[in-house]
Length: 386
Image (cartoon, rainbow, N blue to C red; front, side):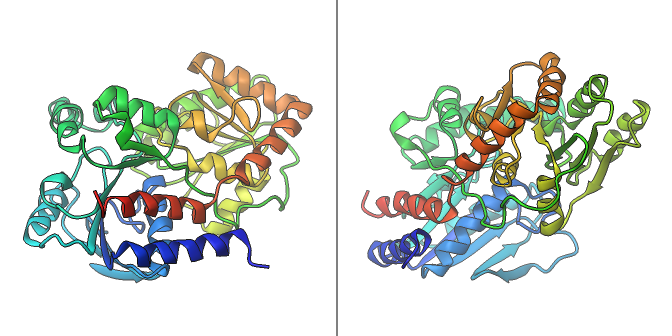
């Protein structure tokens, strides 16, 4: 019998044919191979792979990847990676102006903080991926002067240009922030949840002692410094606790110094970016997956872990509010002061963990990349007639 995924893929192929679209350019800040690639890049890749398989001639256009070829083909689509982190924006805009917009050629812009302003250079079918508002993130990563400029572009300059664009976001909580903080008309913002890869399943070996795993880029917005402090506080109540923070980024040395200064180097590990199999084993071994992030469009690591039967403890922010079903697949925490207390509670309460583990598995089964690709293309296809 044809399974649901096959049916959705067949529907997507038919929708691509019916749309009249033949080529598509995705413009994004970073490529999947970038050392700092995260959830946004993974989302774009999963969607691009399925759209290319459905018959689209798809090109991804991003900034350069250090020590890597300028052009690469992966899973059916081409990725062109050139120009620097900031220079990529004016160059992509110039390329857009030079490329004639046609009814069978579409653009998907991934607005990740700094926009590419596609409404002013592409007049054909177009869709915007906007996962979350950056807001105070600008202050975390830029000098005060540049942060003010970034916030001005995001909150004042760009929104009027996008008010007639179709925007896809990952969660209802992020949608509400986009409407409230950027002033985008509600009818223009659509929620399509991401999927979970089929390889994330229960199994493996659960750690015999309490273990917390966290996954993400080692950058300020993820607030791994807060997590390390909260883990140390949690260990006062859970003395055999161990933790692994998986990921790479420019905050590595500062986080290692903090960990060492708190006397936690023998039980908190920072192994860097792991292979797919190693990350899967880490999720399966954990009693809990944790996130103290300040901003998220969703929180894919939380639903990846959920598919392995591992519940979450995460900050109560937009994005997390949809990636975690509070009290069912995990627990959301409203303040840093409470985080260690909630974490200790779930680690010491086996009945609570079992309940949340079952809820996490059930929730993850609802999330499908095939469904996300189909629904997202439906939004794009609708712009061919608008």
